[in-house]
Length: 226
Image (cartoon, rainbow, N blue to C red; front, side):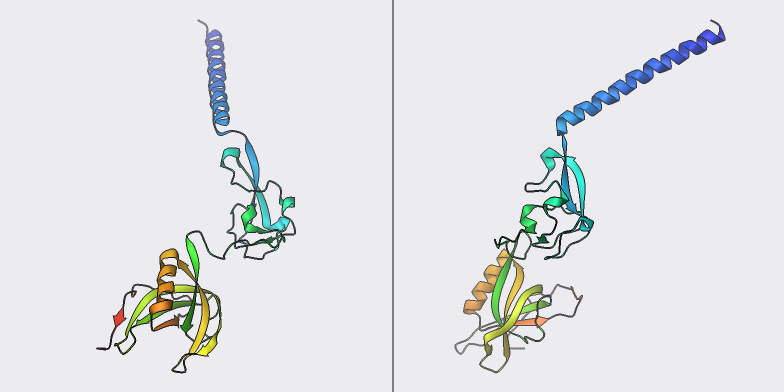
């Protein structure tokens, strides 16, 4: 076989193999598309948005995802939510869904806590000047009463205060200031605080320094023996 014929044969073979490879890739892509279904647009937050943030085109983006994976209640066009506000904080890149948007209808958007969390309301000994929304506190519960020796226990650590104000009865019997506070806690902690509010001698909130998230002392308990 001459050199020219050999070159033509090799070229033809390469063309056939290339066509077969392209056909195989195309077939795989088509099978993948059939399996995941068509893609749809989903509106997401371009940047982190606090609660109450105005929704504008500059703060939103659109990504395309398979329709079967699109979150329920999502929006497909930023124009659908333009001019509205966020009902809760939304992380950058987070899907924007109806439950996260305040449509101005006045319907409740839910408590300002994450999934699995609860809001626990307590009347506690603390300074209303120091215990304010956003501050983190430790919760000290003192048991005992009716002539029995009291025992103080560090019950919860690093708890966020969602709301706080001077309590209706602004001072305890010993003259210490009191606050009515709403705390971000777990369900188990909320049940514990409800029981403590009913049966404990005192609940006291200890404000933490900003940025202090150290833990590890829960359960620390001191009685009359000191």
